[in-house]
Image (cartoon, rainbow, N blue to C red; front, side, top):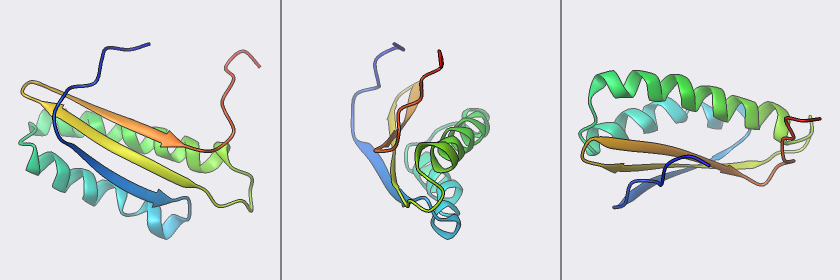
Length: 96
């Protein structure tokens, strides 16, 4: 378990796993980061991490012809930010 999420208002993006909808991720994150005055140095790392996490969900949590929904939340407070990815797909078992 990681550190607790920053308290305060959260921004949420709801996506479907189709390619066209996933294209909304980076523009949303840019707007959300600007709204929360996050530094550019933090934003670059967040882009890399969120793309990997959302791509893994889209590719592996649902069957090939099974659409799914993904929620991405940005939680931010002065000096700290967290991205949370939630989905209803198959759980990942790293021991399997």
